[in-house]
Length: 131
Image 1 (cartoon, rainbow, N blue to C red):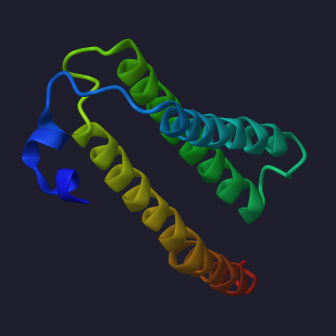
Image 2 (image 1 turned 180 degrees about the vertical axis):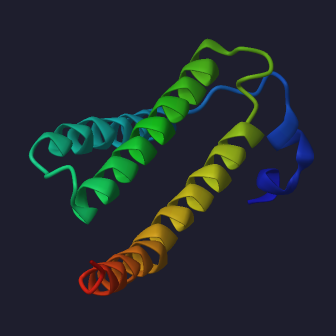
């Protein structure tokens, strides 16, 4: 834990390479996220376009694809030992970005989508009586 508390660990321009087990874990995680994006994108073909499930699936696939691509690029920069792009604080920035976007995705599913659905039903009820 002690090295994690030092700024030199996070902001070293040329960090020490990851151990083979850690590198395999990071590569597997980033690749799995990217693969989930591809699988969820292919699931868009069977979902009707006007449904709420299509909107959710579209956002989830975009989330996984974007997070996965950036994660794989971060790992590749670390593997190739690029001076600036292999800094460890970029993994923290990636994690914060991933969690924030995930929270926004959950907010969309829990709050925004039901409000849109409720508004649409109210509008159809109102327009039903218009000439």
